[in-house]
Amino acid sequence: MSPSSRNGLRPHPSSSPIPPPFKPSLDEVLNHLRKQLLKRDEPTSITIEARDFRRLWAELSDKEKRRIAYDSSKSKLVLHMVGFVHETVTHTLLQGFYDAYLQLPLIYRNKIRIETNSPCIRFGGEYRGSRKIPDIGVQGDDEYGIPQMRLIVEIGVSQTYESLVVVVSLSEFPAYSSPDPSRLVDVPVEEMGQTLFRRVESPLGPIEFEGITWFGSISAFVEMWAKDPVTGSARLASDRMDLFTSDSPVLGLHLSDIVPIPSELDRPIKFEWGNMQITKAMKMTAIERYQIATGDRADAGDSNYVP
Picture 1 (tube, rainbow, N blue to C red):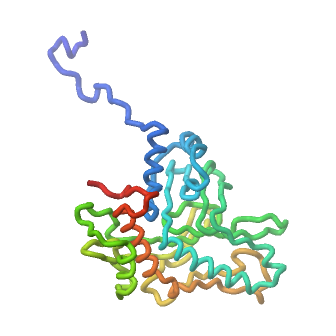
Picture 2: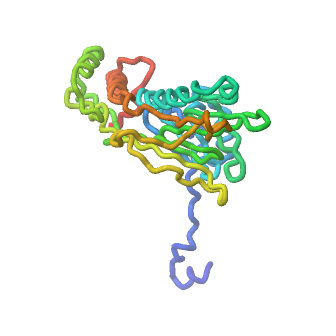
Picture 3: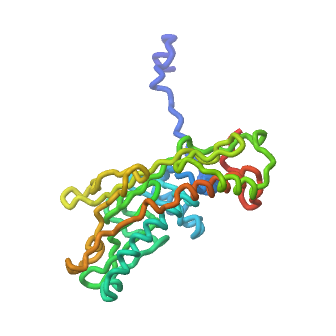
């Protein structure tokens, strides 16, 4: 019998055993991850150790991997959004890169590759073991002709990389959640779509139909990050610019940031933000959400609805 028991005293709470924190099994994490992957336009993150992430990665399909980034320095797995808004922004950025690229003579174009959905796994130091398939990757040959990742574009949530990173952050307010099924009206999706596209909306939302908000108001900013050559840490390399209120956000990117070229051939890389057609993408997202909520799309469950 302990002295405290003999004296009729209870042990101090700090001396009581503390149960270990709950840790879900790999199968539970995988099931949760796949449910989250159904939410095409909603970024999210999961904390998972590097050893468990390697096992999880082996279980994922190539299609699933294209949505996933892993930052080993923070043990953070991030799911990136896809969908109409995401693809509209990606198209605008790709157009800017290709317009600048096509101005170069063939000898320099052969030294540049502009790619989407290409793996980026060359991480060192504290980021060893990280994985990412960036939205856009721009490679340029070094002096030996070896392709090097010069610039990465991230739409949604950014990770830290060894190269220049352009970050486009998109926000919807309020965040979408599926309505209670009892509030839904019995209107064919085609009629809903025709109503939305005939109607003049506020360019930045919200998108409403029959008293339900199917897409909130959207905001976005763009900024550029670079690795500090002295400290090795990421630093902001441009002003943060609002995509929808600035006249024409200019990042200050040039072709010479990607590949060494003569100064007379150097050109700024410009993006036509004003032609992005973001309202159309928002309406298409609203129609897709309506399809899912009303069960019109047989291959997708309504994973957003919380009763």
